[in-house]
Length: 338
Image 1 (cartoon, rainbow, N blue to C red):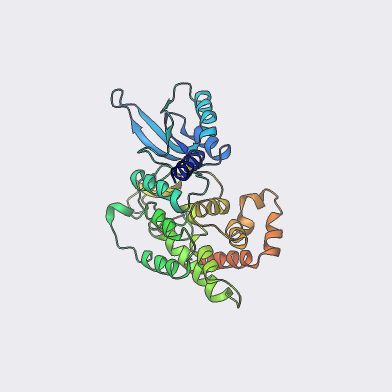
Image 2: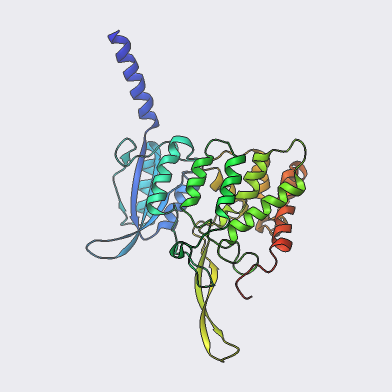
């Protein structure tokens, strides 16, 4: 009996040791280059937060990430190459108080808990920006009642039962998804514009293109989340505009783009969703190519969209629903003068 206990203990220790990750806190002035290495070479995600030296009062970025033990050496070496004097904490095993789960490529289930904790504490895994809209409102500061949020959540919870769905909704709560605009000056360039557009696309998709054999869950995921890439994408800036009545120049707010995670458009939405929910091939293709001919890769000469539309009817349906919502349903919804 004692031998069996010791054997089980050793086996459990070995397996747990294999699954351990190292948690890094990297204080640096070059967070973008370090994050690019983590994402593109190590295939993990990271959290970037603002920091300030207690003595020097110099502003720095703090990159938080968890990697496998074999990748920890590569990350430390790369940090020294990018920023010769980064403050890189000693890698902490994931079992310590700075807990990290492995692997981190798609943090579903248990590993999602770490990212949700970090995102709730530090707002998001890439820099969160102050909310606001050109009409003089401000998302969280005003606490204005959101007329679309509950409807969005109700549809999602009714139709999406896939593992990770609840964690995805929790993540959205810590972004500006429910208050952000859908564009800078075209359709739904207003507070709540992004969630309003997402609901419109879902409704057109469901009412016009749902056929026998189609999946309610797939339609909900694609319609509601196709533009999740626009969360934490826009910021409010000001510009001088001449008042036609008074002839005076006035500062007026407007939306501009500040893409902290330049991963594309449709492909970025797929990446963000799959951090929590595994998409089916048809869903991933539909979201990836929902922009149709407006997609940058198509403008650059890519023909992959043609194959995707030919093989996956859902991709065509989502693109058509997006077009109708944008150019017909949402015409005149911008609060910004072009």
